[in-house]
Length: 125
Ligand SMILES: [Zn+2]
Image (cartoon, rainbow, N blue to C red; front, side, top):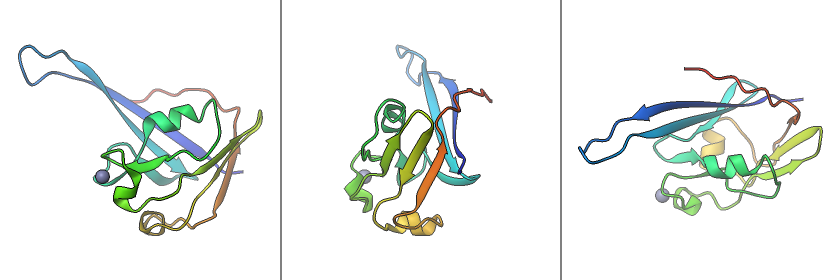
């Protein structure tokens, strides 16, 4: 059994213009077995926080890894990560090899299974 950990840190950002409104910025970091898989705030390949959140309710092959501009093909990512979910098990299967996965020590077809019942939020920061 693997440990897929999702850490979310938020901060209130004050507007840079007088008529702007403050907003909340959320940074997400995903680790698998304590090794960083990705973040929402990297320079190129990023975790898509909305796709990640959607996997709480549905499986499929979402582009959990994408480009900061929202077009995964822009950074050579042509396949989503296969996500399956049962009452007990959350499974992620990595897609075809990309330079990002290789650079981060992951391999195409690698399968991770985690306990789907871990729902205790831990707020840090
Ligand atoms: Zn891009």
